[in-house]
Image 1 (cartoon, rainbow, N blue to C red):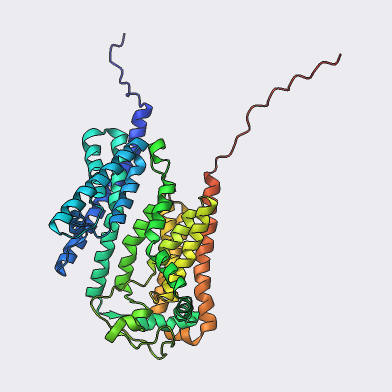
Image 2: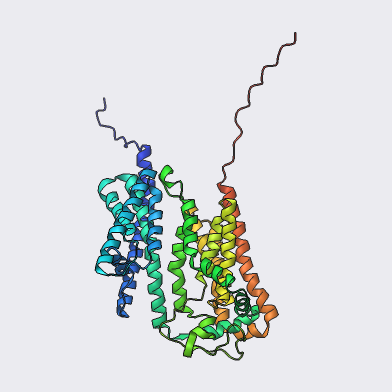
Length: 455
């Protein structure tokens, strides 16, 4: 009789299989967190080099000192609260308001700068502490994701401010004459829309300023709508608007460093002062000739190419398509109004907007592919969008004169390039959505209903 013990492999139950499947995603999130932290530290060092506080220091100061933007901090708190129950949300909101009242009274007594928002930041940080000390497993991960999302919203804003400072300090010359020359192929839309907005003052000016300035608020509302079921389902959706917003804000300023542009109202308008080529915008078209870089001040951000307001408004429009009729209308209105404002206020050229749309669709496609899994269609779409975006930048920089001399060919080609990316995005994402819809399998045949007996 064989008495050798048999080696039986341990049973891999569903819990073990689930844990194994979660490990790669946990490693990915850990790596993403490490990269983000390293990036923030690098920006902190760069900002210190230019004699200002970086994003980490700015956010840490707002624990005690008056915040720059109270609504932004409360928007971060709102994103964090999507993981809480309604009772916990009421407690968190009440604690934030109470802490803000205490800070307000102390500042009023000592005569310090008055603002609100510290309470919201305290509550978000408190949620992180509770997650680490009082939660376990999935509940801890969910609460940490909520606090991370809220803090990233604020950190993204601080990071953008630091990026803009770096662009103004390191890019002494700007390329506005190149973009202005290329923009002649599109009919100089900034000059045209600028005169239109001027003719609608004061109503049109005020409405567009409101829409342009409150784009983050509109995005937060759409994001909260998409995340409204997180507390009940105890998980985040695989993809939502806030993720794309943050990635656009992270990647966009890097292009500013490559292609520094200040915008028509600065390079050709009154806001540029002594640094402007001339005071031409919006009533006199810019001069022709061979473009060349022009020196500019060390204050104005080089934040035009691509237009990130256009990119953000485009993603807002895309994500609002899944909402109610009112949300779809609001998304369309915000897109049209933002495009009008960016041109009408002289902040961007038409070429910036085309690049912004292509940039937004490429980033959005990459984020959706990251959520659902990469395949050949996703790789092709992202690669094509990146190639078109790079081709736009190259043509603006090296072919502006040729584009201005042949507007009836160059203008339609620019619009066709943007349209091809739009068409590819729509066709690919529709196919993804069709594949995600479960196909109903036919069930067993229903038994025939008994027929009434004839008497």
